[in-house]
Image 1 (cartoon, one colour):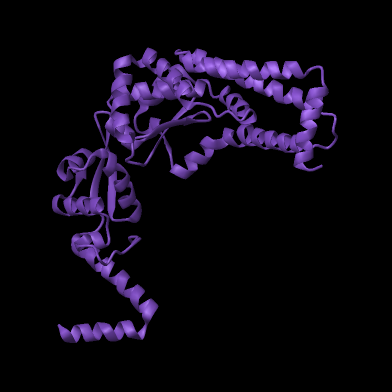
Image 2: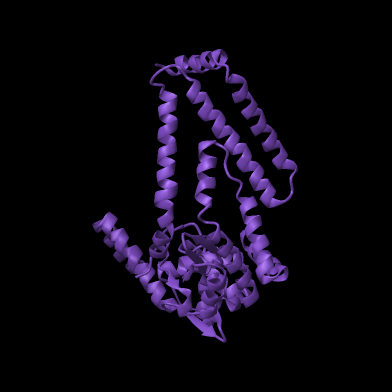
Length: 226
Length: 119
């Protein structure tokens, strides 16, 4: 069947089905939630609204596929292949991303150089802190590892480093949920807005290390990257 | 062995072989010897934004060495030039002469001897 034929099939099957109004309703709900996201200020509510909208889209897609009466539809096969590949990449490969980064950056456990960073993180989550050789101040979390560049350790004072570590620890604590969010975003073709997640991590960092330390760390790093 | 990425014949001085920021960093390191990152930023008057990536590149290319010092639990980089200014000049000219001879063979060598006669 060609693509034009398939599009006609979607039109026909949806029009003939009694469930079509429900598919339309799901789409309307999704649009309403996307719109609501623009007004809502609190990051966790913003994120929940987005997840709600994405779930509505996913249900609409699943319902539309279920209603199709044509056999062997290329679009459905393509979508399932897309979902399968992204599932493999996100749940299979990304879990080992920290192993890859340790090798690539030649990262070393931070306890070898500044022990307190590891002790600080141990209180917040179960992760290993690594440092790597680069003058560019940068920190990120992957898998169960937190990476700090030596440039970052050089630039920030202890309180600011704690704020960064708390921020990254939040990511580690929520890492088990992130793949689901990524998968949902990919399957509904609605890219995740990283800022909501970063804001949540900053909330946590401010609570742990104090908002002054977080603010001064942020402003030092913003000067570098913006 | 240092890495020579690009040569811009029309540029002035060392900026033929280095970027303007790299040139300022190298000149400062040759003049002052060992320096920390903050000393380098204040001496060269280049903000950390631009200097950090460039320093990584110079280290990777082999022009500068850096060690890590920990003082009172604080970490800092200390930079020093891998080779002196003369050694670097020697290295660069050898590399360029090698590549000229490699590409043009006899013509390059004939021109060198003519150049020598002119002098």
